[in-house]
Amino acid sequence: MPTKIVLINVHSSLNAGDAALTEVTVAQLEKKFHDIEIEIVMNDPMSYYHDEKTLVSFLTWVNQSNIKPIFRFFWLIFISAIPALTKRMLGKAFYLPLCPSITPTIKSLIDADLVISSAGGYYYSYAKGRAFLYISYTLALVILAGNPLYMLPQSYGPFQYWYERIIAKWLLPRVNVLMVREPESLEYLNKLRIHNQSIHLFPDMAFSFNGSQNENSVDSFMLILNKLPKDQPLLGITVIDWGTQYLKFSNQDQYEQSLIVIIKHFINNYNGSIILFPQSCGPSPSEDDRIPAMRIINRLSEFNGRIILIDNPLRPDVLKTLFGYLDILIGTRMHSNIFAMIEGTPVIAIGYLPKTFGMASMVGIENWVIAIEDINPNVLMDKLDELWKDRELVHRKLLVRIPELAAQTHIVLETISRDYTQHFTKI
Image 1 (cartoon, rainbow, N blue to C red):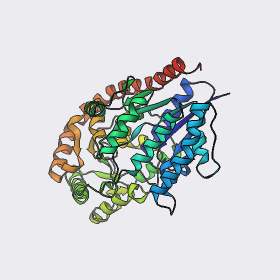
Image 2 (cartoon, rainbow, N blue to C red; image 1 turned 120 degrees about the horizontal axis):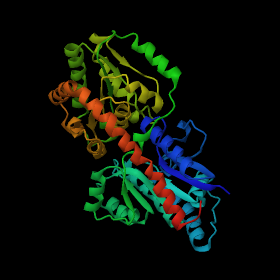
Image 3 (tube, one colour; image 1 turned 90 degrees about the horizontal axis):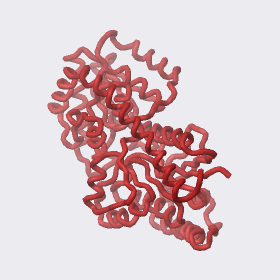
Image 4 (cartoon, helix red, strand yellow; image 1 turned 180 degrees about the horizontal axis):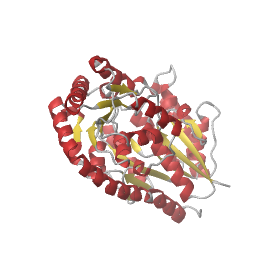
């Protein structure tokens, strides 16, 4: 029988970063393991456009009912913990036929040969901490069932609530192999005294993303480019509605105003053109980058013909290719910066979580990162002017450094395969 591998904590393919990480993971799994069956547990399974079987996540299932989420969560614990415990103690899981809408996900997690928690940046405090609970319970159920659990390179923290730190201290040491994607996350776990005997530091897996170029989409983009003035500098921008996603952030207006000023600055002082890219188009309105981008566009009507907003979702391979046409990208979405740097395009990264600063330190571009809380027009203009002067030097540096990071990511699945083979079974 094939080895059943379940990939969990995948968000949505409407987010190009998530889509790229999933594609890289599946490709490496198929390369490192033999005769496997892959299932993917997602918050937004309808968005997935490849062949692997998808299942709804606990987080989505709990929130998609009129029943209060906390009551539905307790019901989930009841119907899932029993089969997990019976499998661990008796060697056979006994499922309760009480909720067919989530039973396939429960069975997938408990019947898996190994479970892999996806790469990314989702293990931190959310608005009220509920999403953290649902994600943690998904991990805990795998451990409860006695299945091997691996966590691909990701960011950890910050944890705002005391119970989140307690959960993390219990859960993370029990993961078979724990991976972090930047030194800051490793330091944060050490600060909280969260230790795992098998912990590894690897770069973000998206550094090795290639994808297959969608020629039709690229051709459509070229038609758009042909509408802009010829032989002029091209600045790309990705934005985020962080004030809606993270209610404690109160500087959304200043952030957007800073981007408006930098757009005017680039057009007036560099005779350039601007393209706003949709790195994420959902699944919720707060995650749709086109909404804040449209607010910015609407305040720049005097520059019609010099600014373009791409308003249709683009797959990650297309975005990565298109970023290669830019002179500079100002990216708030972290993976838009990674896509651009793969193509050798210099970036100014706006960091809304510690992960951006960690990524920049691994690449060696710390000088080109601005915290979203600290952003203002003058700071952003100074960064752009400085990078414009050094863009060729930065371009050459990226062409050397990015392949080095990509090579390191190929060790990730080798590490998991080696541990699974050594401790559980022969593949």
